[in-house]
Length: 56
Image (tube, rainbow, N blue to C red):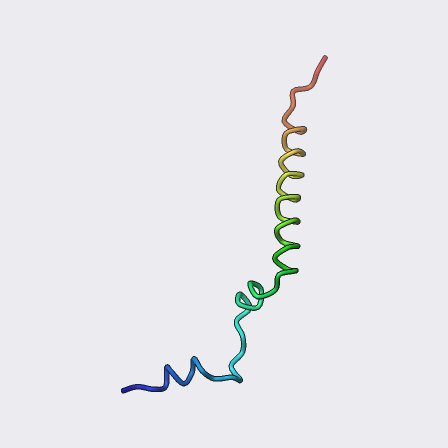
């Protein structure tokens, strides 16, 4: 019965993956939840303004 896989999962000194660190931080998630929609909506607005036809 191989126990090396089981021992690797229970190693306390193993480095924590970056995605787990990200998902464990509520303030980073809050910041991303505010910043990403804000950036997308602002870019969308700029594109809409640039695509408006010029008036005469």
